[in-house]
Amino acid sequence: MSATTIDPYASSTAPAGRFLYRLNPLAKLGAPLPVMILLAFTRDPVTPALFIALAVVVILVGASLTRTVALLLFVALPLIVTIMSFSFGLWTDPSRVDQSVLLFQVGDYRFFLGALLVGLATALRLAALLVLACIGGLTSTGPEFVRAMIQQLHVPYRIGYTALAAYRFVPRFGHELEVIRSAHRVRGMAEGRGPIAAVRRAAGTVVPLLAGAIRHAERVALAMDSRAFGAHPQRTERTRIPFRTRDWCFMVAFWLVSAALLWWSLSAGPGLVIRN
Image (tube, rainbow, N blue to C red; front, side, top):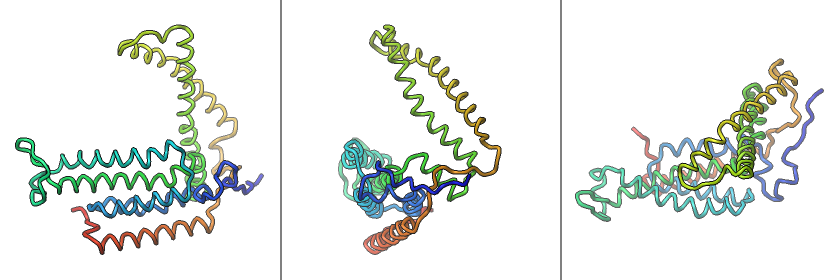
């Protein structure tokens, strides 16, 4: 039986007007990937800040954010960047930035504005990598990404679907852990406070969780064997994830805007600095 072409993005779960959900997962990975590689060679704070702004605009326009994600993106991330800027600045050698303004001094240690800018550049670079990764991470699922890799990048399905099966173990373990804890509470085994009681409760979940993991792995292996997994070089696909013209348009548009931002950053300041 030949595989039927099905549009997995036509589901009602995708918010109307949010274009990122209707793009191929590989397009959402390939668009920011050159920028993410480029950011590894930047030293100034302007370039990563520009790409953070670009990624945030793309996410706001193309994705539907939950309250938790919005708080993490607009509240927690700036706070983390602030803390990391100060922390990385403390690790900077003061002798390399002693020509800048002295912010404070504690004993023999001096903290200069240049050290803070170095820490800010490093923190913004890490934040830019995270926000750029969120373009695909917030709007694609693990199964979609695996299927796209198998169909477009021709990754062997033995590797792809094995990784997908392992990925689905995580929520399964979380559910079984909650069941075990509920059973312990019903039996009065979750009583007591303090670190010793916490260690005792955690140790009591190890054996039943391990037994449940072994049983689940056996069921998955039996299901894969019954479907002749790995017996043939190719398998038919129930769900097709095509790479359309709109995917290419998104990637090219993202690359062009990124090139314009990089050109503006280079013309406005020191911009790109290659590591020795």
